[in-house]
Length: 117
Image 1 (cartoon, helix red, strand yellow):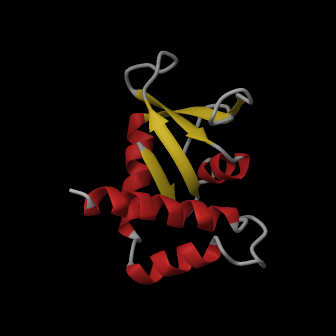
Image 2: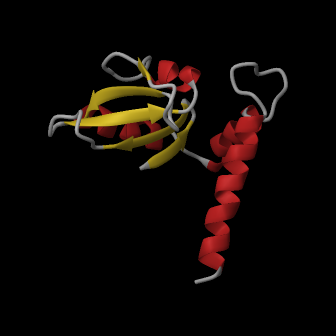
Image 3: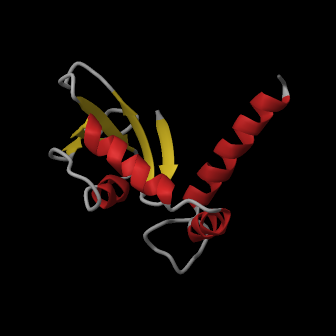
């Protein structure tokens, strides 16, 4: 599951390092997974520099589900507009403009797939 949320971009799934009640949370940017750790309990953040997602941590499935519910509770188009704009603001050093490009490119890719159906 790939997720763009206010705290960053994460790829989440189950792998051989997880127990049945756990998931692996992967991030491309350390700031994202560090921000996530402020909102939910994670295991140690592990650097995996040779992988496509160089930062990983294990979390309980229930913690990830609770985080998604809490995040979804506060969604609105107004907040989404601010979210996308935050990734494009030069005065927001925590979220460089490249993230805005990633969000808009991802959205455009999904739109292109569904327009072809």
